[in-house]
Length: 72
Image (tube, rainbow, N blue to C red; front, top):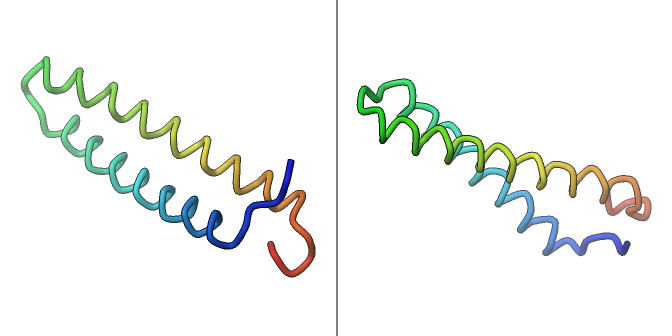
């Protein structure tokens, strides 16, 4: 596996931020929703965004393990 470029790292960090925002927003809808179908749909979205967030965080952790000094 090759270390990520600085541009790739920026993209991953932006994606982590976006997933975190989407996760918090859909979790807020779940907490406030009284409509069962909407609540169920948003619960699935929360799970998806959490999985995406975790995957992106793992990619950053893997990058740190293989990045040359000064790049991590």
